[in-house]
Image (cartoon, rainbow, N blue to C red; front, side, top):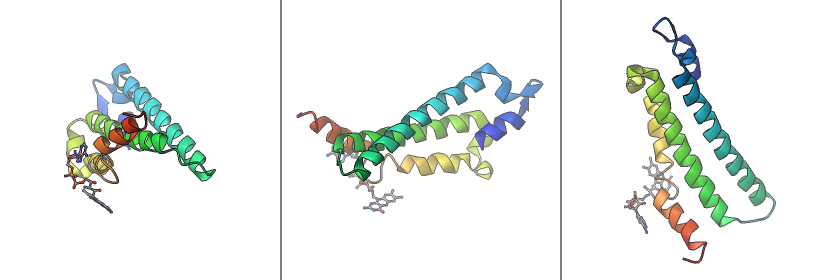
Length: 120
Ligand SMILES: Cc1cc2nc3c(=O)[nH]c(=O)nc-3n(C[C@H](O)[C@H](O)[C@H](O)COP(=O)(O)OP(=O)(O)OC[C@H]3O[C@@H](n4cnc5c(N)ncnc54)[C@H](O)[C@@H]3O)c2cc1C
């Protein structure tokens, strides 16, 4: 949705996606998403193959949840004022992603599980 918006929305005579600042935001977001995806997929693959890697499961849950919120927040920013309004649906994505840092084990609990896995 945000990619389409960045291609359509015109400001200062060009689509906002043509500004380097906005292009770099997409590059950062794509890199973060890919990192989180690979972590989740690798951990899921290990679990599916009989392992129970609690540390990496907790890391994947923690990291993917945080990245989802960061990316959704950046998408609101790229939408400008429209991102704040319910009509565009982006603020709803942010709110939905925000639950992941609370539900099924909060960030703090994930950090504690990871920390304890090092014998602390
Ligand atoms: C929309 C929604 C849907 C949900 N769906 C489900 C569901 O389907 N099934 C289900 O079981 N639960 C569900 N939950 C509950 C969710 O799992 C809990 O909200 C979550 O585990 C946090 O518990 P709490 O709200 O009681 O917060 P609290 O336990 O009161 O925590 C408050 C804060 O204190 C921190 N904290 C608590 N204990 C520690 C600790 N030992 N060390 C460090 N920090 C700590 C927490 O990280 C948090 O920041 C849902 C919650 C929401 C909002």
